[in-house]
Amino acid sequence: MNHMQDTAAAPPTDDARRRLRRELRLRRRELSADARRDAAERLCRHLRQLPEIQRAHRVALYLPNDGEIDPTPLIPWLERRGTRVHLPVLKPLSRNQLWFVHYHSGTPMVANRFGIPEPEARHGAHRARRTPAWALDVILLPLVGFDAQGQRMGMGGGFYDRTLAFTRRPGPRPRLIGLAHDCQRVERLPAAPWDVPLDAIVSDARVIRP
Image (cartoon, rainbow, N blue to C red; front, side, top):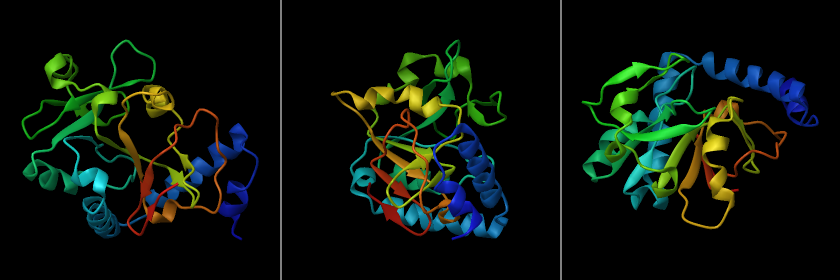
């Protein structure tokens, strides 16, 4: 068992999670541009085969940052099917929560406080351009790490966990699918009680159904 797997098996302390998160972020950042492009193509082939994606009318995805696997090659395929594509936007005047704003080639974009492009706040403030998280059919969210049991690790900011906490209660909810490079898979992840469970995890090499 390698060092990273030893760390993954450790108790879910804050230090263990921070250490593992650093290791996994470094692993994905070390991928070459060609490797990232090939991984994105394989990822999107898997995604196009998922029943949740095939029947979805409203899908949220993300623009990759910090070496995250890239789901954007899926956008033209979704648009040809008449699927409405959304991007996450940092919700103004709210602590670590997200809006989901309709995105197309003409959407005005700005860099948020993390340097990630997102639809401009005044554009997204119009209710007609936003879809509540509960009304989306699928949300594709980035992962820092995952394991074969479907446990996942995010960036640590809690944006998706806070925004999607409602999915633990009865009522309408989107299907939640985590995306990552397969090199971000570990033997066992320390789970945290606030982690929102996923319906599936998709990498460039596999689909996991927890």
